[in-house]
Image 1 (cartoon, rainbow, N blue to C red):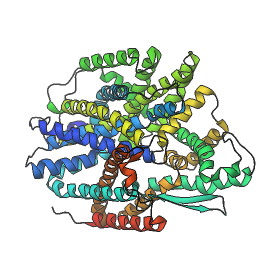
Image 2: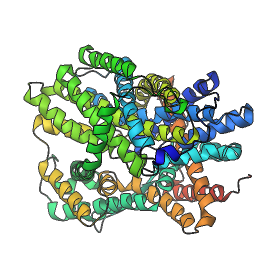
Image 3: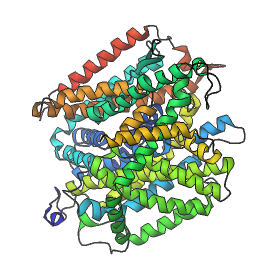
Length: 626
């Protein structure tokens, strides 16, 4: 069998340092850094990126070059701990901001406390680990060579090319520095607007772009195909749907808008109609993805259930997991905490729903990332399906109104984080399987990273909310807004089903012609201003991909530089949030005193973005010394 033939890079009988003070401290720092960066990115554009490869590269640059330490397993532990931050952040910011938005809309609701966010996030992250452990043998070992696990395999290749680590880490840090400076100029001193926009009155619509480094980086990492699907969704919304609504709406008032269509403007039409159509398409895409994966899901689910009953293999270091007894006790404690803790108002029914859906979607997520990678994992679809079912069940059992909606979001948050964590952990375990790490040590590393990220995410969310507020132009929180709309619509029975069903129909039509629904649906749901720069980044990646083997190194370099761009913008976003809440005088913040009001205008923004893309090209083409 394939798994018996495979020989890891570090044999099972060889012992190297893994969990060390250096790997723990550096891993925690990267977990917080990439957790903060992904939180900002997700709240700004509704997408997050995997941190495993940039974390591994940064680790190698610091450990091998600066500290002169030489253990591939120690480097692997750093990326294992570090990547936990971005996956936990992704699950949290896709859902929890809904609670902040409800608190602003009603005096009857208070914002969740720091400890509520930390507790919910930590419980979910640990459940994701518990549910993933019995899947390791089935997915990582038995199907080695069958499931590619793209990010996990790529991260292993980076670690194995250790002699290049110091040089390659410079690409990440270069991207981080350039992006930090660019973000400060655009959104700090506001020399030029970070969002350029043009009105097209002849068709009753508009066009524009958020000319930010992170979006170009996302597009390059995703590649041309996915970024083109996103852009196609944006075209469908802004050059088909919005013009049609303006053409036929005229002076008619159409719910949910409270004024006639011709008084809404382009953004009003998008807010009142297009995002509901997009929500229907996103939900349909997620459900279709789940239905298509049912055979493999059932197969994996059966293996996972059986995995809890197997005895731990202790004879080989590379096949040791955390004990089943420990995991079951830990799972029981977490379920009791979720059930009894007043801060997590889900009750016994909610706790049971979480266990059932959590284990199911952990298997779905782990299998999906093994096939299509973390970037294409339909976590949004899983969360929407959970929210619809959970809200309906809560409503039918008398848990209605505000309390019922809060419970539904808490359930959805935990499921979302479970799915994100399970997918990330499976990629990390795949990396470890290839390089010869100890699975048990990696699982302990995931626990360490989860605790650090859970404590950090609450502070990050409060900081960003105080600086700009969720749902604002600076932080639209598109995924959380979508989850909020779904819960409100199901609980209140006032969801504009005509628009949602229209989106579902579009999703089905896209599936019929053989195009992946989710990326197109997400592009339809988001403003075209976000998908435009993503598409430009994807076009740059396509340029290198056309060069064949000659462009392969440039593509790899670009992924590292793009990861730095994303991390740098996220880091500067946190710094700007701090400047926005530090007062100079009453009602005046540090950030407002350096505001130049976009003096260079759209033209200046275009020039800066072109310069950024030129730098992207130059650094991608840079030759790395072997």
